[in-house]
Image (cartoon, rainbow, N blue to C red):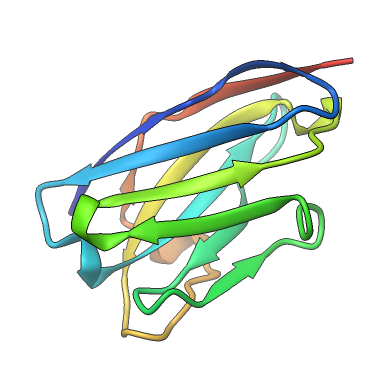
Length: 125
């Protein structure tokens, strides 16, 4: 497994932007597909964006056009640029890692075997 630490959460006004970052350590970062999840109170943890080892991406319909996931393999980081944030995006955001083949974008939550502690994002109206 790889150790993951998220940062960049906080309070933002509706319509604003945030960039979340996730730093990985312990294993070879480039061997893992990565994903960003969010979990609001009372809701399940849902995948919002994923990126393969090769840089292919996938987004949930709810965030398509607002979020951009990217990775920097030499720096062992994955980021999530979030724009035009509405209040309903308030949640704890988690990054996760999944061992995968080079071009595979992992969309199944149970395939992610390493998780960060989460970072709170609060969007005020």
